[in-house]
Image (cartoon, rainbow, N blue to C red):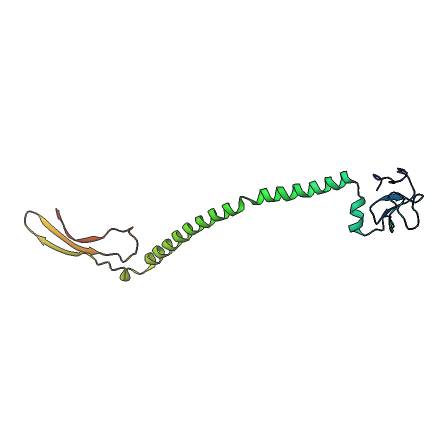
Amino acid sequence: MDWFHCNQCFVKTASAFAVSSCGHICCEACIKSSKCSVCGASCTYLPITDEMKPQEKVFFKDPVKLIKSRLEHISQVCLLSVACTPAPLHLSELKRENAVLEKQLSQLKMETAELQKPLSQRRVSLPKVTVSSNANFMVISLKFSVQFNLHTSHFPQVSPGQFQTNG
């Protein structure tokens, strides 16, 4: 509290100062009993000491130090604000990616469950083989049907057909 001076005699190095109810700062030597030594108004005095309440002390702090501390606080708030700005955008992007991955996981679980079923539950019929022999060649006919009961289009549908080999 060394930046201010007495508003009456302008001394800076007095032993004690007080602020009047009319807003003037006076040194101990210039204080009159019930009148302000600067403007003459009737007033009361509040001694300026380190034992003042914090809300009163703030008015007598060095303005440069006060401004520096407030600027540091403001700059920290600004840095935090700038750092947090892209977070909602990043969060929405992660939510979209998560939805795509959840869908893929669901499809893979269905496919895995289908592949783990026993063969009898997959609706696969074994080929019917007929062998006929002729003196000149042998004819093997294969008739088969394959049906997969999947919800995906990874497996082709095979319709009944006939294969012949000449041996």
